[in-house]
Image (cartoon, rainbow, N blue to C red; front, side):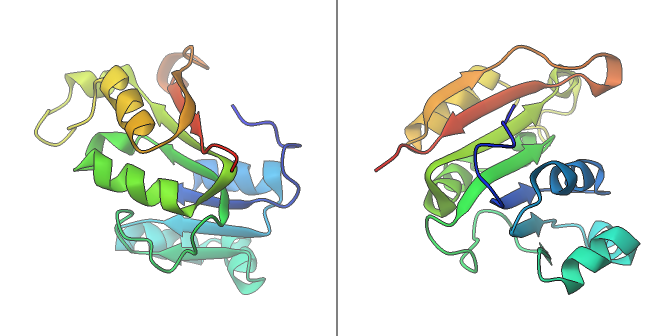
Amino acid sequence: VIDATEVEKPVIMEIGPGAGYALRELIKKFSPSKFYGIEISEAFRKQLTADKEFSASIEAGVLSLHGDDAKDLSFIPDNSVDIVFAFNVIYFLDPLATYMKELYRIVKPGGSVNFGVKNVAKDMDQSIYINTDWDACVEEMKSAGFVNVEKKEERLEDSLAYIPLVGKKPQE
């Protein structure tokens, strides 16, 4: 979804890196100057910290892992993040508007937010998978101030298939 040449050595934040599959690829693709991993699960944070590649990035001061809830990222300065990624996470963000406002605060003008969603979430327990109306999610992104917000065509196939919901913070 994002062109790796848009920003050299970007500051990236991923909400919910889990076991680190996307995290590994994002670090390889973008060579970020800073990468915030916001992972609420202590078990996943321990797993990520134990990984040789990730621990080297932590020791180098590039990767930092945080157990905070993404609705309060007060340790991340305003207008400091180039790219936000969150795959299979938007379903659980409640209330979604609170999270979107916080993402808008930390994203640099011209920066982007990128959610990956799967239609299979619509068949899950809706008391847990709260946000599964992709159009409503897009509207919430717009309400927070993001522009060029869109639900893109499904990418990849089978169990890897996902739908990108993307937006940008307007240039000032």
